[in-house]
Image (tube, rainbow, N blue to C red; front, side, top):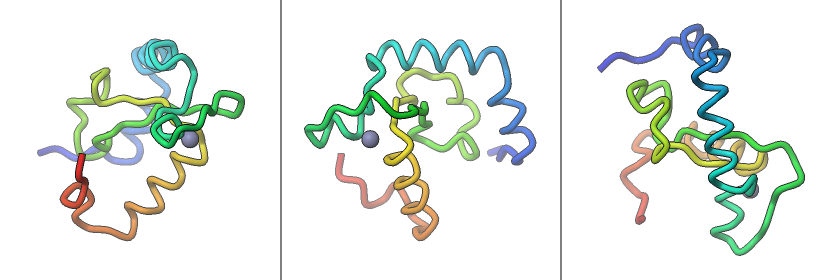
Length: 96
Ligand SMILES: [Zn+2]
């Protein structure tokens, strides 16, 4: 499997395809953080990101796949990445 370099990822995030897909996902999720929503909270006001559930770096083929994309607030997004940095088998312990 090909891994994307940081440079390739930066290029991707600047691409027209990503910008368009990002807009579609934000609208689909009604500009609400989906992670907060699962916790019974509505977060719309702050800056929202569109997150790759399976990391872009490892799954470039899912880069524009709507089922792999989710709206997250900056807080949840940061939390996810901090958590993953500590773990090697990041998906093995997910129960959902
Ligand atoms: Zn959130």
